[in-house]
Every structure is written in C-alpha cells, then in structure tokens.
Length: 346
Image (tube, rainbow, N blue to C red; front, side, top):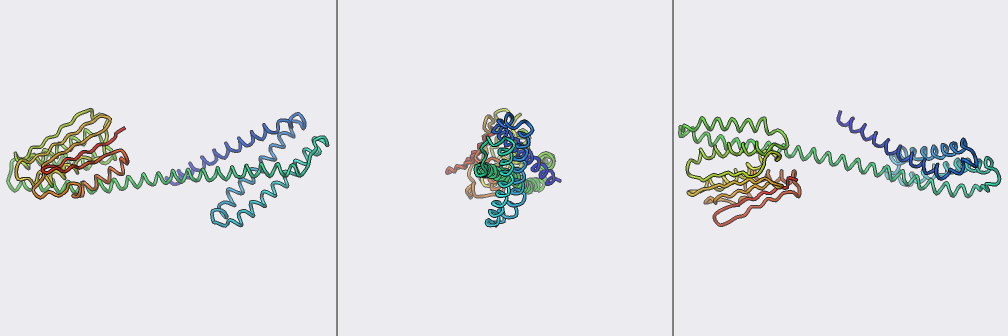
C-alpha cells in the first residue's frame, strides 16, 4: 500500500513538472512569434504554435519514455544516438515543411522564406529543447532517488535504534533481578519496596518507552526509581546523588539515555569500591542538555569507555540520533572517572 502511494505521488509530481515545462515552452514560442498575428492572422498564429509544440512534445515523449529506458540506461549508446538523430531529422522535415508553407505561401513571397534558414532555426531550437527535457528528467530522477534513499536511511536508523533499545531492557532487568535476589537472601524488609519500584520501572520499559523520544521528565523519574533500588542494595556504603536543573517541560530524549552511563558507573566503580563509594549525577537543561556523572574507581575498574554492552549501544544511538550534535567525553583520574555528555537540543 505504501509503495503504491509513493508511486502515485512520484507520477503526479512528474506530471506537474512536465506540464509547467511545456507551458513555459509554449509561452516563450508565442512571445517569439507574436508578429504572426498581424502578418498571418490569429488562426495561423495558433496553428503554428500547436504544430511546433505538439511535435516537440511528441519528440520529448519518445525520447523520455522509449529511447532513454531502452537504449541510454541500458548503455546502448550507439542505438540511442541513431534513434535520436532519426527523430530529430523527422521533426525537422515536418516542421520545416510547415514553416516553408507558412512563410512561403500564407505570408506570401515578401517573407523571403528559405528552407535552409528554417532547417537551421529548427535544428538549433529542437536540440536546445531536447537537452532541456533530458536535463529535467534526470534532475527529477536524481531528486526522487535521493528522497527515497533518505527514507530508507530513516527506516534503517529507526530499526537499528529499536534493536539497540531491545538490548538495553534485558541488560537492566538482569541487574534489577540480581538486586532483588540479594535482598531476598538477606530476608530484608525492603524487598517489597524493591518489588514496587521494579514494577514501576517495568511499566515504563514496557508501555511508556515505545516511542523514539520520550519526555525527559519520565526518563528522570525512571532514573530516580533505579537509583532508589541501588541505594537500598548499597545501604549506607555509597553516597549516591542526583541533581536536576532547568525546565524539563519541552525537552524530549531517547528512552534509556542516561541509564547505560549510570549502570557503567555502578558496575565498574561503586560496586567494586571497598569504602567511600560515591556516584554524583548532574542533569542541566537549557539550549543544550548536559549530563555529568562522576564516580570513584573500583579496585579493578577497567576503562569506562571500553566496557559494557549498554555503553556501546548508547554511543551507537547517539551517532544515529544526534550526528554532529553531541559530545561524549570520559575523563580518567587516578581515583575517579567523570563522564560528560552534551547534546544540542535546538
């Protein structure tokens, strides 16, 4: 159904362009031959225009719909130029004979009509109009192909983003269930609260994050629930903070934008630290969206920019969704890692 709609749209656009082109050609010719109204009369003036434009349209139609597809696009260049030459010669014979009749008999001997002059004039103008129609056809073909390629790229981008998002969900669910499992082993009274938070998180994952972009406020609420789960699991052994500045009302982001960075900080920093573990998250919204995350190094922490499926997926999504409009920096210090993500939202 979609392809049929697209084909009809392309056909309609071609018709509009060709119609506009031939209207322009007709007006130019009428302006060039206005002197015939006084010399030959209005009927002959219109007959002259109809004959010339009709022959030009027939020549262009044969070239566009027959010669170019069957010969030129098939790289049968010799056959193409032979047929074009024959069509042009046929046009010249018909048009020049009519011109000789019009100027030689209708206007009378005072017109000084010469067949050679008519042939030269018609050949020059026919070649020009033929080249213009060829240029018009290939220009439209190029534009339509470019538009179709853009549509294909957008569809491919969306499919790839959906695939990357599908990888994030199992990754998070695995971590959350591990947290819940650890609490149930301890028979902690916080286990019911964890179940409730996990249910809220799953609701967001299953029902509220299906779109390509979601309100930043929902993403932040999702992150808060995630951090609450981690605080319960960590107890008083980690300093975990989240600060948000700016107006979130008109800011939309891809789902699970911040989570991979936070997960990476827990996995390679907070969870591996023996003491004084911390994780500071700052979100600032203005013309740009800035996210800063800093965490302590774990005893055996690897480079943050090399580990984690979620982080690799995030980098790919940023490249797809914000090409040339984002900066992701990871700075390693002796005892900490800092991540700075900046996205131009304008």
